[in-house]
Amino acid sequence: MTTQEVFEIVKHDLGELNPSPGRTNYLMTIMSAGINLMGDEGVTFDLENLDSEDCELIVMYTHYLVTKRDTDGGMPRMLRWALNNRILKEKANEV
Image (cartoon, rainbow, N blue to C red; front, side, top):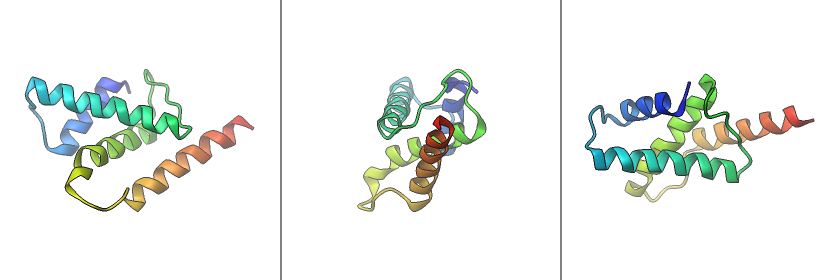
């Protein structure tokens, strides 16, 4: 999958099938920022050929970034585990 295909899934996940152009730019910016933030934690993605696990991680992380303003809680445990597992998987493949 490409990032554009992942973005379509993000829109469905957020229930925004036909966002306005401004909202589309906002969501794309948040998704890009999420990918960069995960990169800061050690995750690298092949953005032209994402597997299903990476796609789901990007969707979950983007959803979290878009909706976290509505809550005082931290990152959901499920997302933290998925992110940690992805980081460990990448580090194990470097050995």
